[in-house]
Length: 513
Image (cartoon, rainbow, N blue to C red; front, side, top):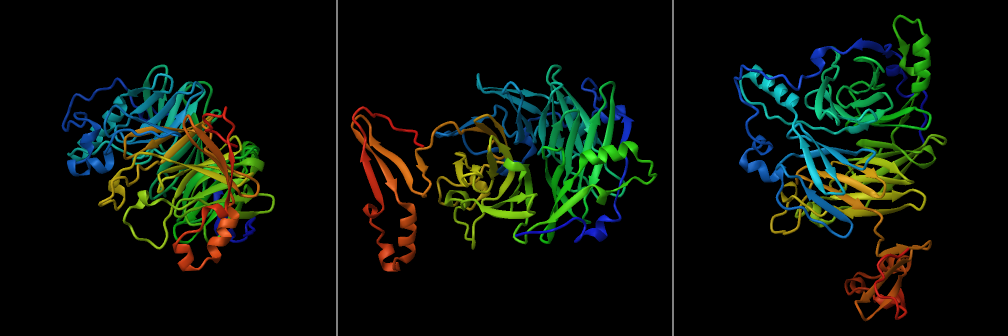
């Protein structure tokens, strides 16, 4: 699965693309809303009501939730106090406070893990924006968006994206105030959609999904000045999705044409910065001077999430299947990995040739890769060194997103985003109005040794118990070689296990490794 690049396959497209110099401008006052401004000429009152009102009654169960928060041994959920906020982008600050964007209210909310209390911050700038928008068309416009990107800034603010309304939002934690920055929309662009967002020092990096570019916003240390710059896609009619930075500050991102082809792009940002500062070229710099690109393997269809993992390998989540991939910049090779398929409680009565977990985003933390398998209602943790994966099931399910007729426990909560903070993985449930947390520090009740044997404990409280070794490789061989008649009756368990009696002083053997 090896590919080569350096201006071969798409050179005809790349060769004509110029990188315009970054421009430093004073931010117009119109870019930011005034939280104290109130429009006195009300034509359509869009501020009356609650987020639940943005959906008609027959859609509220589907988009706003169907039950209470649920928990299990490894996952704990929390119900957001305001109904139907549709939480999406989520992050944590250095103090461990959880922040998330509410796509159906325009508000930012925080959750304190110590007190388990929510605080939701009203956004008057959002209200004023939709007030003006509704007045311009003479009818109420539902005040909702999709907010996929969020990050904490060291100046004590939270930044997040507003995909439907071409904006970036800044929330000042100390002032509890909002500012709105209009996302640039070039004249030759058919549309923009700011999606994921990363704060990197004094700059903010955003992928423009529909505008097919990576945008940079660099803020001056004094005053309201901003330097803007964008990397256009090397491919025409493509979309640009996830991005990440490696240890040398190179930007890696995916750009692709749905159902056709795509590439992994490496942009040499440090070299561009040097050349841009010294260049006198009136038309700007050539894109091909600063990028390398790598053709995706044919089985990669929807490469959304991207991250840098151990040994500076690039990891990519493929949202349309059960696959995720690694890319080694040294060998220029892709390697494919697979999740487990979803359980029936995710798809219900739906009959398909195959079922997909749809890993969406992927992040590296402490040697592991974390993914949200949103079509399997799971958070996955993959260890690339041992090539083992633990998949944690999110308890809540909304039956309106699957074929769940006649099934009590069925559906999806649409886990669209997550963030990692130490041993905790925080996530949002877009259609159940919950946030939740996976505690990866809790030991698993089994372990797998170097020969793929499964070890686990089983015991009777206050009586006795055993340590069990299950010879999974031998079971797999026997299962494959068994006749249909024999296998229908099952394979004898004792052929594949060994067990060891616990000493009498062992009472509660939970964790094992």
